[in-house]
Image (cartoon, rainbow, N blue to C red; front, side):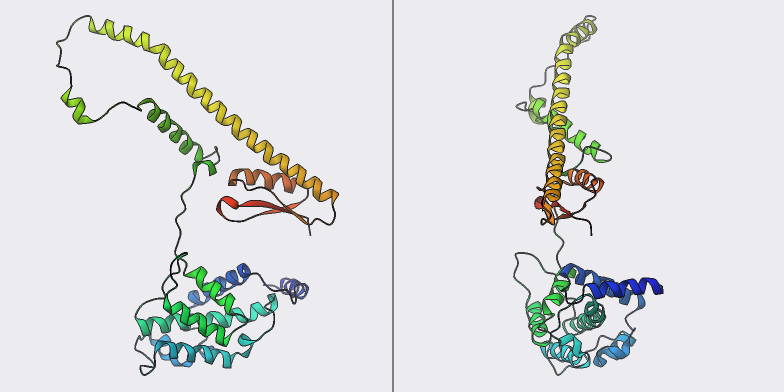
Length: 326
């Protein structure tokens, strides 16, 4: 970072002084600091970390440094050492951007020491969180220690822990969320074909056992068979043509419905921009939830009209929020 970038960063910190940082900003800052520490190696900044684990960090030993004490007692001693060594961690000042840049590095050193202590004492890593499940006892113990030593910043610490150790949630992608362009077009087309085949064969018994039981006896070849087959194909041709036309009509109806939905979404953008221009006291306008393809169209139009936008919300409630330019 050059001198001009540092100066700009200081100016930004001055503007935001006294304003509490968002949890997302704190989590991202911790993630970047944690990644840097892991890249540099576990033996970095030894003089700034809990001295009881000093030998273990240097040699990689896993023997218990305090066998006479329980895990809860060791964790309390570790956290208390950080609170005594770095009093700012236990402060009551609002966690703004300037203070966040100071505390994050010390928090990450403490978090990595806690990870190592957990593995040494329990011979396993910290368990993962899962929404809707009972919180593991070890997390309740850690949270109680954080609240006791860092009452003002404990929610931030637990938010980072829960983000790192959250169990991944598998989300089934709905076909309605896929835009009908690019690499997604083949997926949608194959799905449409499978639905047509399913509707055509509905009610027919395709069981191999039944077919083999009632299979007609093999007939000898006769010279009129090619003619009968050609005549049958001529009779079936109009039916196949009708089926294709029906499929094309269904495709056109679906395309028209998608275009109508896009037009309504862009019309909503026009109304929102008009409202923001008309009412100067209105700083933002949230549109209705849409899928990712329509949100992309809305972002483009909003930016073209001189306003800013970003997506907010999760899953089916994700929508575009329009804001004025700074």
